[in-house]
Length: 227
Image (cartoon, rainbow, N blue to C red; front, side, top):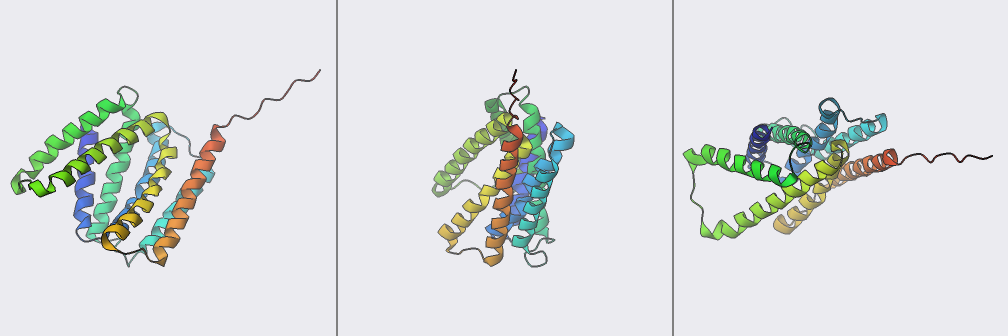
């Protein structure tokens, strides 16, 4: 499972970076939002989790929101970069399921260490043919990216350790807020009306899923016995 997760991690990052050469960040992340839907769906056959009909409807509505943002036929959904993002999302979804399986025997720290070690060795070997030496000017950026990635992996692993995959997955939609912020900070642009509309649908779907999870976790009150 550790080797599988490491291989999926390399595929996920490789496909996503390849897609970013041609796709805007917001479009790439919009397609990537298919991942939470895949996690919730895969949690049923692979983890034995139960997803009720209302949550399935909410997941479907979230997918509609993704399509609203994407506008198939306009944003390159069936283009090679778009398909690469879909491949990255699929790899991430399967890797997330392996996390839930590994939490039964491993700590979150050990899973992160093995994940990063396997990715470093595997990706390093794959990079040898086109290796480019590190420039010192890029060192702080790469170090910051590595630290953020490690902390994010620890947090994500702990989340899947404590909660159900189908409940955690909708929180991935909050990434849309970060994408909009990065687009504004670095490129000085805001999403169009379709992106805002789709974002509203996606966020509403995720919040409803969290609400349903909270309702399902609450035990019904026991009736009082009267003489």
